[in-house]
Length: 216
Ligand code: SAH
Figure 1 (cartoon, protein in one colour):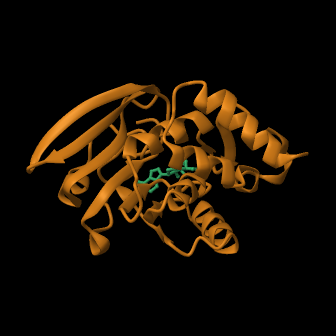
Figure 2 (tube, rainbow, N blue to C red):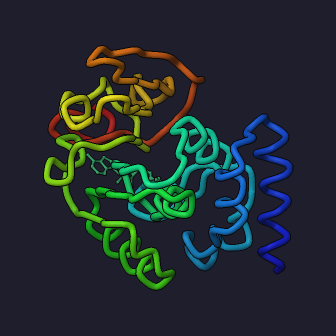
């Protein structure tokens, strides 16, 4: 399979055609080898227009939603970004390619080990990966210019607001366990400015300030 060509088709047909235009997002998604972030048996489907299982009942997001969230983070380079839900590590790699300094947290040990190893192999030295409950954030490296949550939350955990820099933005799916709305929360002169991007479907954010267990 010609993965580079598949990537170009993914970027053209799924991302540019749907209106994502940030050159940094498009270049990053053209570059990151998405097929290496899925299990070998599914690699031939890595550039399809849908999410894919990555084991442990979790998924790598659809390419378009990765592009849309990345564009909404408005990364110019040099921003400190906290990601909750490392999963395969793909979204973190895309943000790193855009020039962000990424801190990412995963709660499932196996996914944490896999993604950490892969990101190391691919020489993403600017990504710090942590095992733990991301609903409390990662206070040690705060404040963050951006916080991206790639799992669906019942509400915005307070720690994210506390750990967000002035002028910063949180992108988070908020809703019930089945369907959410992609919400942006900006910190403008210390005040919350909220907007909604679109409907979306993510696996649940499970933790102290998220859902208690899968589906509850
Ligand atoms: N960004 C990922 C998509 C991951 S799916 C990618 O590019 O592949 C969401 C991930 O969030 C899952 O791996 C799940 O285990 C993780 N997750 C759910 N609740 C979490 C929490 N409280 N802290 C950290 N990770 C969490």
